[in-house]
Image 1 (cartoon, rainbow, N blue to C red):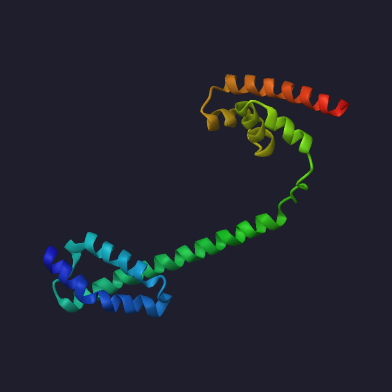
Image 2 (image 1 turned 180 degrees about the horizontal axis):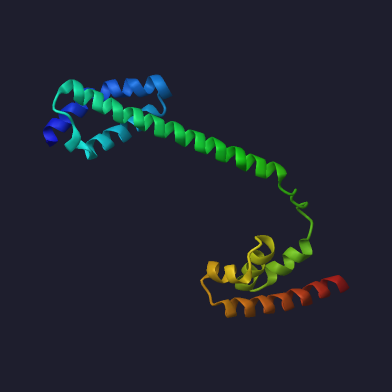
Length: 162
């Protein structure tokens, strides 16, 4: 089976590559050929004995590979369109110098406290989610968050009086 399969795949590889090149161009054709040959190799027990039928069988696999490729392109295009829409409708980021005192106060915190504050206030996570993200007990995260809020309050009050 292995020698026969290898022979059929080798004899038809150039034709399959031309098939793909005519449909998707030279950039994607080799990848589609590789996918087709791997699928055919995995399905080798189903390879027909007749050479003409074996060739048609391979081109059937190639056709399905091409359809999958096109569906993937369509999915990526739709996703890119959605991302562009989200970016276009997203809130405009504040100026780079806006909130420097707050950023400085957060950066002055213990790194584990600062990360909790960022995850809650910048990324919009709940404390329960932050606990999952940091792989820490929720009670520990709540305690660290309370400590961070107190330290931020003190730092911002000190900055306001200067």
